[in-house]
Every structure is written in structure tokens, then in C-alpha cells.
Image (tube, rainbow, N blue to C red):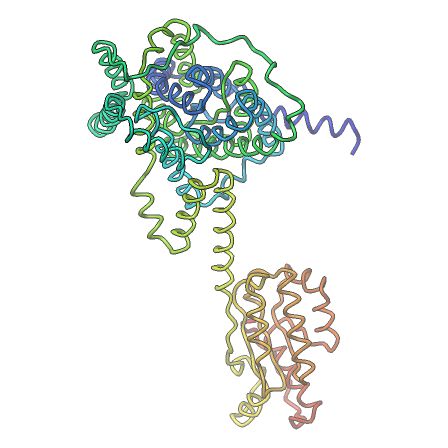
Length: 577
């Protein structure tokens, strides 16, 4: 491939992931509905952005910067008309250990590196592979994230300083021990009150943003009654910081590559999952997965430059966007614009929100992430689904999110292969209905004494081929084995080798193997390992079962086991292969 051809191909891929004119045209259809939806999402997103910023360790201002910058750019360049992006609990879970090891500069560098990786995935058309993530992995992943988010809020909800440590279970336990020694009932009252109002309000009036109502109420109570135990967020800058590259440390790029891959993988997984959920909640909307990865890449490249953290699409905010009537990207852009206005105009008021109130918001968010009905249905579906779900959730809680997804995918794949392999069957069948011509009962009995026919159904591949070899090798007391292969659905190199080994073992014992019905698509694997040559050597491969039976009879006649007969000419009738 010439340089010009390669350059043309790359430019073509870039054009495919850039926004098209049609993406912008949709924004003019229902601007009023989109503006109102964006306002509703901003009200819901404000406490979440603040809370996730605090949980990440970079402060509330980092959460707001991410919601504004990433929210706007992902809406402009993404592949979904309904997606809302910003800081999320899942990403916070990944960021905490990175901050502990590399500090704020490391997190921001990881964000930029993850953005580059996401753009690369988009150009490689990797978005289509999201469809191969099994539902139990997604459900287990979501359950594990919910547990981690809830545990992360324990220090804030109890009003204690966050203990040192990376493992969320250990940090939560240390916070509980400190609370028992020095209880802060004000903090726990505010956090539990905010969570209770959100959960009860969601059942009573789902369209009302009770998160902001509860946070305002908690802030007013803390200010009016001068509750010193209710520590506020603290001072926030009035506006976004100027873009800066000062945090990029080239010397750390090598050591930060693994965390960057983890962040990019999580951003891709959560964003494409959220876009799929949004499509399912509407009629006529369909996202472009590669454009969505590109939009998330651009968002993650830019957000760290303004002091933000790595971002993903947010399922909860996207769901609010859809439910409030959004139909285009204008809603997500409005959400980002409203938050920007808050950053510039209301920073002093926002800074007075108690940390315990934000902890309550995230506790309620974690509880609402758990879909009990979906978990129950998945656990009841099959034992394999239940195992994958529980294992993925446990790995998310104990290890980290990317390892959890990898473990879930590997286990789900292994169990799926086992289930597919168990579908393969080899059973003995009566070959006499397929005998060509007319034969007496005496001839039938004589042929049955020397010939046995087996039909192979299903896949013959690496996961179950050796079981087939064991069964076939146990054949004895016959002179000819006929293998009917028309119903073999899949045949790989391992299956072809196993078949070849079985034929060789039977031949060494003086048993001839005839085959019928080998499909054209299976010949390549059989030919590659020499199995076809073995069968063709003595002309033992046939198109149909009647032809294979006729060949078996001739073999027995040549061996002197059957008397040579001269049948009247007849037409070999077509039979099941």
C-alpha cells in the first residue's frame, strides 16, 4: 500500500467519525423540549458532579469542570443524540488508586492518554464489539460499581476524614472504627436524610429532581442552625481554570500506560452501554458506536486541560435526559451550559453545600443503580449466568473494574464454549433404510454384523472434540465405520485433527472408515491437517450415505467377508447424508 493510499484511508476513517450535517439538523426540530430537558439534567447532574469530584480526590471543582467541558464536547462529537457525559461513579472507582500512587498530575495525564486511546479505538472501528459483552457481565459490573460507590461514601456520610488506603473495603472499615470512637451524628443525619428524600421522592414523583431539593434543604439547615460538624465543600473558583499542559510528565508515560488503558476501556464500555440503554428507551434513535468513542476521546483529551477528570457517558443522567423529552444533542449542550453558568455565577453558594449531603446523594445513586428485578431474572436464567454475574460483581469490589470485566468475559466465554461443546452428539443410527437396491433380511443382518453407522450432530471443535475421539475409539467388533457428517455445524483444526487421529486408530485395528456428507466449508480444515488425503487414499469419502454403504459393501467383498453379488442395475436413491 502506497503512502498516498494509506493517507487517504486514514482521512476517510476520520471523516466517518466526525459529526455530519444531519447530526446538527436534528437540533432544530424541538429546541424548546431539548432546552427544558437540558435544564432538568443539569439540576440532577450538579450534586452528582460535585460528589464525584470530591470522591475522586481532586475536589468538587474538578467534577464541575469535567461536567462542563466533557459534557459539551462529548455531545458535539459523540455518536448519540441523547447521551449525557461527565464524571461518573465507575470512573471515580478507577481514579482513586491512581491518585493515591501518582497524585493529581498523574490522573490528569492518564485522562489525556485515555483520550488518545479512545480516538484510536474509534478509528479502528472497535465500537461494534460492545455487542459481544454478555448481559450477566454488565449486570455484575453495575452491581459491583454500586457497592464500591456506596462504600466510598462511608467516610463522608459519617463525617470523618477519609482514611489512608486504596482498598475501598478497608477504607470504609477504618472510617467506621473512627466514627465509633468519635461519632458525628450531624453528618450521618444529613447524609441519611438526603438519601431518604431522594429514594422516597423517586418513588413518589420520578420527574421531580429531589437530589437538588434535598441538597438545598441540607445546606439551609446546616447554615441556619450553624452545624459546625457539617463540613462544607469549601471555596470553589469562579470559573474554569485556563488550559494547561503543566501536569503532563513524559517521564511517567510508561508507568501510566496501564492505568490509561484501564480508564479508556472503562470509558468505552460505560459510554457504549449507556448509548445502548438510551436507544432502548426511545423509538427511532440509534447511536453510532465509533463516533461515540471518538466523542469520548475528544472529551477526555480536553477535560484534563481544564482541571477535570476522565469522563464517560452517565447512564443515570442520560436516562433523565430521555425521560424529560430530549430528542437531540441540544439537550446535553444545554446541560453543560447551565452548569457553566453555575460555575461562574453561583460558586460561593455551591461552596457551602455540606460534604455529608453529597455523600447522601451518591449513596442514593448507588442504591438506585441496583436493578433487583434484572439481577433476579439473570440469576434465575441459568447457573452459568448466575456464576458470571456474582464473579464479575465480586471482582469489581475486590480488584478493579477492568480486571472484573476481563474475568467476567473469560468465564462467560468458557462457560459458553462448554455449553456449545455439549451440544455435539455422536449417535449410532440404523443404516439399513439407506441401503441402495433391494436386499433380503438375511443380507441386512449380514451387513449389520460388519458395518456400523454414526451420525455426528453439532460443532466438532477444540472445546469438545476429544470427547468425540474417545467415543469413536471405543468402537469394536465391526469392519466398517460410516460417519455421516452432513449435520456437523462447525469444524476447526482441532476437530479435523481429532477426526484424523480416530480414523488412523481405527485403521490400525483393521476397521475401515467411510465418510458421507462432508460440507464444502469443512474441507479446508480437513485438507489442512491431511484428513482428506487419508480418506481419499482408498476412496472412502462419499457424497451421500447410500454411496458410502455401497463402498462399505465392496470393501467387505474384497476382504472376503461377503460373497460377491451381482445386483440388477438400480438407481441410488437420495437419502439423508
